[in-house]
Image (cartoon, rainbow, N blue to C red; front, side):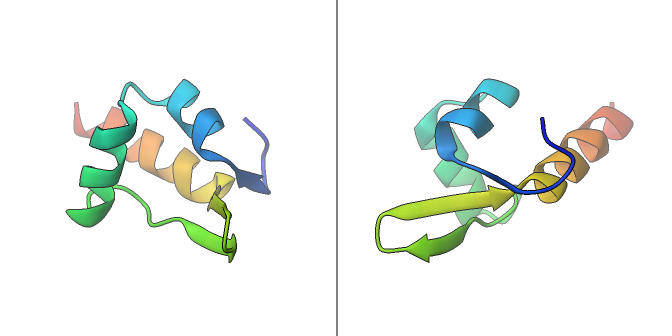
Length: 61
């Protein structure tokens, strides 16, 4: 995973053990970082947000 920058949905799903529907349910429930909308058809997540979320999950276990 890059230190900084943006990740698209397929990249995020390779890093976390969620299906697409679970990913969007978690976003709605505010238990996963919200994506940014760069344009009408481009949705991304900040790499820093995903890295932080992964570390928080590891610490919670």
